[in-house]
Amino acid sequence: MHVTVAAFDVDNTLTVRDCVVPFMRSAAGTGRLVKVILSKAGETFQSVRRRDRDALKAKFVAGIFAGKDAREVESLGIQFASKVADKWLRSDVATRLRWHQEQGHVVILVSASLGAYLHPLGDLLEVDAVLCTELEEKDGLLTGKLAGQNCRGKEKASRVQKWCQDSGIATEDLVYAYGDSSGDTELLELFSEPTWVNDIDLVALVA
Image 1 (cartoon, one colour):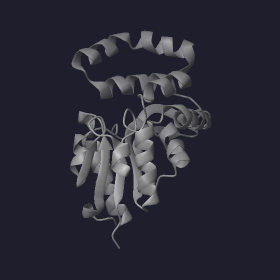
Image 2 (cartoon, rainbow, N blue to C red):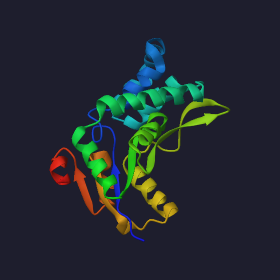
Image 3 (cartoon, rainbow, N blue to C red):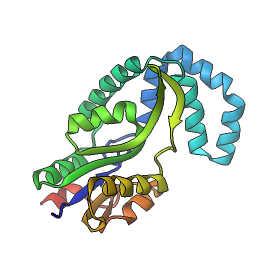
Image 4 (cartoon, rainbow, N blue to C red):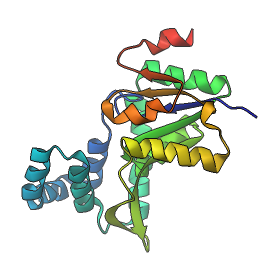
């Protein structure tokens, strides 16, 4: 049986803004955030000089989430996902997502965003799968580390391919993909009809 898969990146594609930093800010609280910034200042400066976004993100994730109770972060993620769904969805892309669902297409979110809020967002949007950056957990606490690689660039494509293999979905069923930056290049290359959302009116495509 053939299916049609549509994949959406999240930050600045499905949403009108990047959501990772606001979520980390809400999880940290002002005091802890300032402490993390000061304690990581030297390493952060070096990462910025190298323009190493993954290293920079990993440092702040570790400083903010290490030792937090996983249930607390899960609760924050659910609240934050509701905020994203209510206030930050890009209307034209959300319309396109709903159109795919109405056609019976399989819809997935593929993002470097943190699973702590992306999974609840996926539940709210009723998508079929969420592939994203996960936080490690141990004995109910977060280690502050990322579970595996940050889901960007080639990693997005790799996870989509594995998800297809595990789901019994053929490569030719990867039809629609939506992204907005160079970090989505490898993902969009997997799909036969890739769309750079900043170049195309998605509402017009629905018609």
